[in-house]
Amino acid sequence: DAGVTQSPTHLIKTRGQQVTLRCSPISGHKSVSWYQQVLGQGPQFIFQYYEKEERGRGNFPDRFSARQFPNYSSELNVNALLLGDSALYLCASSLSGDLGSNQPQHFGDGTRLSIL
Amino acid sequence: TQLLEQSPQFLSIQEGENLTVYCNSSSVFSSLQWYRQEPGEGPVLLVTVVTGGEVKKLKRLTFQFGDARKDSSLHITAAQPGDTGLYLCAGAKTNAGKSTFGDGTTLTVKP
Image (cartoon, rainbow over all chains, first blue to last red; front, side, top):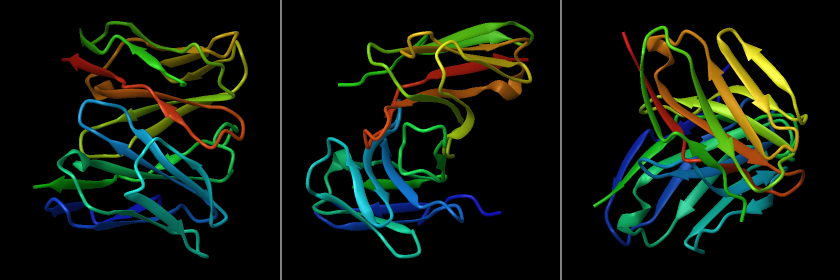
């Protein structure tokens, strides 16, 4: 069975541009979460979506937005890109909408975003 | 703020040695996961623990969740070069709508 898939794998943008990252969860998983991982640090929580509704939001500016589609895939949008947005963006899916349950998150290999 | 502190930050050992890495917090978590991440890849789930005092074993890896569900440890017996990677712990509270990661322990096992 396919795991979590993310596209594109790599992306180069310039400051001020906008970017859309895509994620397809594991089949049957209705929860999708997005994380930002800067080099040398652990992943930082951005959003969780469950059944197409936002369940949680991390401490990120309004330039970051996301949505989940009826097939449970998800997009992360970032507007007005800054140099500091350069990072690995990870998507994770899980069966449960409760991240504190015994149903863990499974991660994709991420999108490496570089801002010039 | 829920913070997860992982220690040590870096660990370099010889093949065959034993090691323990730690994940500590002042917050109580409903569940805690350990992941291993290799360069250019996403984190891969190793284990989930949900019960205080719980011990889980995965071959040479032993995971323990603290009685108060605030801390956890990962012990590796007879480390191998294939164990090299970034070990991350992540905690979440029931219906809190977020998951918190530590900054990881980078383990290098030399042949």
